[in-house]
Length: 163
Image (cartoon, rainbow, N blue to C red; front, side, top):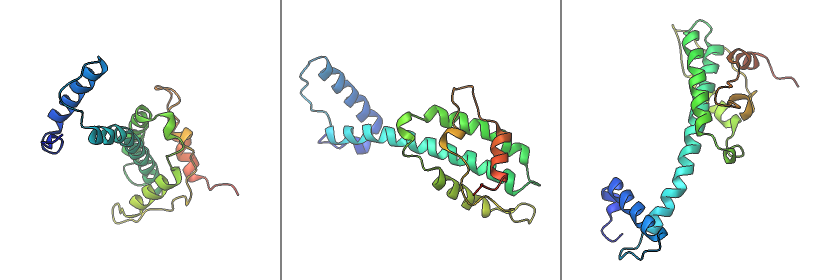
């Protein structure tokens, strides 16, 4: 748009663009052309935003699971109780096309880095698994109400991977 409304008032810009697209879909010929470059960018960013949200929630779940393993003397029940909410929310954001894009090993490395920076009561964290023992399907609910067992997830983190 020539008046750069996109940069000044995104809400008003989005409302105007939606109305223009509705009019075009009805076969009307509005005097104003949609802001195609910014519309394309915004449509693309919707999917990227969902992917980032899903990855962030999975990362938080991993971080909390790793905290339980690293700090058995810490607020373990609090961390355990947080994990299901993160996994449910990650499942809500997840779409099948994300499966090939979510790197569980990268998420595990990032969560591990966050945990090793923490001290609780002056104590450094205990050892963490070097590799991620989880596939994406291990963490995401298969149905909205079908959560993975937190106990089983913690057991996988405490068991050294077989070679």
